[in-house]
Length: 193
Image (tube, rainbow, N blue to C red; front, side):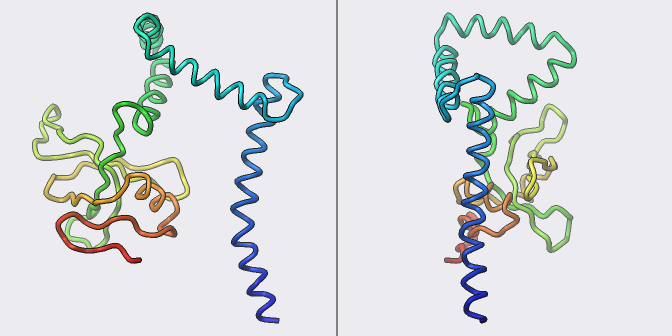
C-alpha cells in the first residue's frame, strides 16, 4: 500500500505542472481565438504572435520609430495614461528590452547586523543624483508573486552572484524550491549539485 501511495504522489508531482501548463496554454489560445473570431483552434494565437513580431520589426525602422516617438510623447502628456504606459514599458524593458535591468543578481543582508540574506537584482548602480554616493538600488522579487520590494544598500553590502539572471529569478519566484543558481563572486562558495 505504501508503494502505491508513493507512486501516486510521484504521478501527481509529474502530472500537475504539466496539466497546469497545458491548461494555461489552451486558455490563452482559445481566448485569443475568441477575440479574433477564428474558428480554427490556435490560428488566432499564431496570428497574434506574427502581428506582434511585425510591430517589433516596424519599431526598429527609422520611419516608424519617429512615429512611435510621437505617439509616446503624446501618451506621456496624459497624467493617468503616462503612469500606466511608462510603468508597463519600463517593466517590459527591464526583462526583455535593450536596457535589461534584471541582469545583475546579488545577495544582500536586508537587516543590518542580521544573519538573514536576500537575493535580488541591482537596478541602479549610482544614486548620486539623490545624494547617495556609494549606494545602489536592489530589487527583491517576491516568491509566487509579481510584486517585490526596492531597497537601497551601500555598495559594500551587496555581493554579486555568478549566475544566470533567469536562474536566480526562477529560484526566487519558486520560493527556493528550484536548484540554487551560481556561486557568490569571490567567496568560493559553490552551489550544491
